[in-house]
Image (cartoon, rainbow, N blue to C red; front, side, top):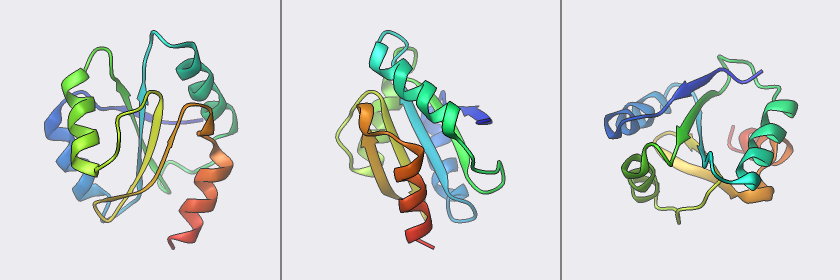
Length: 115
C-alpha cells in the first residue's frame, strides 16, 4: 500500500529536496481527467512493495495544482508529462517515467542501482 503525501504547494518542493538527502522520495504527477493516468496509478498501487520508511511517496493532482506541476518540472529539469513518476535522491531526479512506462519493477531497478 502506498502512503501518499499530498504535494499541493511550491514550498513543499524544496522540502522534498531536503528530505531526499535523508530518504529517497517519489513524486507521482496525476491527471484526474486522464484514463492513462488512472491506469498508471492503479498499476503502481497494485504492485507497490516499498516500505513507508524506505521510500516516501508524494501525490500531485496536477489539475488542481498546475503551478506546482510546472515548478516540479523546472526544479528537476524534466519535461512535463502526465502521468509522470520522478525518483528524487540527494536533491536530484534520478529516474523519470511517464504514461505506461511507469512501473514498480523499473522503479525498483533504478532504486537499487543508486544505492
